[in-house]
Image (cartoon, rainbow, N blue to C red; front, side):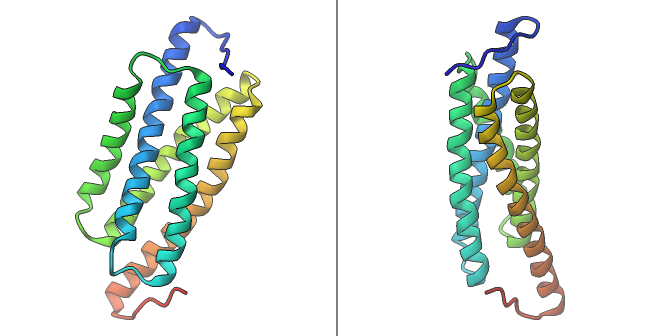
Length: 172
């Protein structure tokens, strides 16, 4: 199944769309890697670790959905470069947070916002050109991403509160 785009110069439009989609894929891969790093943090309470594992598992599915969408659009010439760029941007956000779990969660939130924005754009493009099969991939990702962001924001606030007050987090 190849996505057909009938706007302007088709080859340029497909190339642009595929490179942007590849960058989103790289960002999603970077998020999965960051979540893996967070999961290995011994300071995370059990409840957060369990929930983060569920988010991680869903995000791995999001990566597969993005790969399927990229295959549908067609892989352009600079795909690997675009994937690597998305991963680098995500890694830079995470690296800037250092080893502080609160800052790592906040950096993951920023990366997930960036990814959700890209996916919403792709969803709208696919909707306009009538590719509901691809829209469904993005719709699933976006619905789950909204829940992930809500949860991660809440956890960042709880972690910060705990650090300030010295109260332990009970998050079962």
